[in-house]
Structure formats: structure tokens, C-alpha cells
Image 1 (cartoon, rainbow, N blue to C red):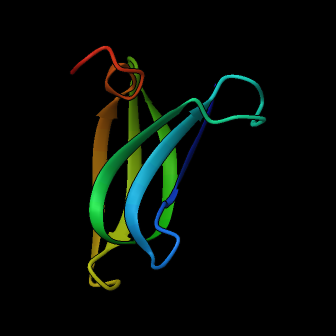
Image 2 (image 1 turned 90 degrees about the vertical axis):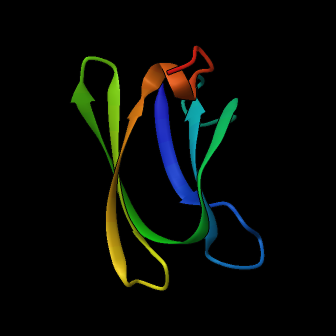
Length: 79
């Protein structure tokens, strides 16, 4: 699988979303909104034990946040 994070709004850098592709990026079957507000410059990493880390800027570049996200949550299996 490939994971990708971006601001998913078409009008502004908002709606920070993580997407998952199971076909080498041809399609993005999973899309989960993680942060509704301003979202910029992000980095994803595998933390181990099925957990993903997403480091991103939010709120007009004023704050850097680390979101710890279970892969099971992204794939719809709950928390």
C-alpha cells in the first residue's frame, strides 16, 4: 500500500486528509479526513505496530502537530 497526505480542499489549503492506494497509486480507495482546518507541509512515517505518524503544519503555519493514526482506523477497522 501507498499512503499520501494532502490538503483535500479544491479551494484552500484545508481538510488535511490521508489517502491509501493498493494499486501503486492508480487509484486511492481510502480517504480519511484528519484535520478540517488549515493544513500545510506534511510528512508521513511508519511508527511500527500498525501505527502511522503524520507531522503537519496547521492553523496558518502557526503550529506543528504530530498525529498518531492506527492503520486499522484508516482502513476502516476502528481504533
